[in-house]
Amino acid sequence: MGLRWWRRLRGVARVGGWAFLLGTLHAPWPDLWDLHGRTWIWGCSAALWLPLGVGYAAGDAGRVWMAAGSGRRPLDVWRRALYPLLGAAASVLPPLALAGAPEPAVHVVVMTVCAYWAGLDLALAAQALLRGEPYGLARPPGPALERERAAAGWIPPWERA
Image (cartoon, rainbow, N blue to C red; front, side):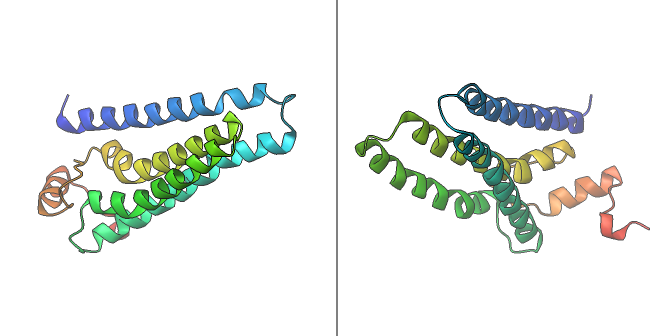
């Protein structure tokens, strides 16, 4: 097994880990159908799926930003995309706790943050690993990645005939 297969295996493990975490966070809600209303259940599903899509879109935009030759690292994209959401969540949780909000409200905030983080991670890290490419937070994709792609015979999709 080559290095590319180990990277792909790490990518599959990463996707599986996020799926397990998000499934675990979302699992209690269908059982609470009678306790809460249908609107609450749909809201909790939206708190899972919408941030996942928005996080993926932010990560995809970050990959395009890095590939444009900006010299940015994946860590820079993580900081720009994740810190505002973490700050918003940190500013929402204490007032919820002081107001005596029910525990499900706190659970929804945590689930939203995790879903956004998962989408961001899937776009930035898991995709590169699933393709068998190296991924590192502190180094920009650059000449080493290009050399490895050329050695593997990789052709960008826009150059394929």
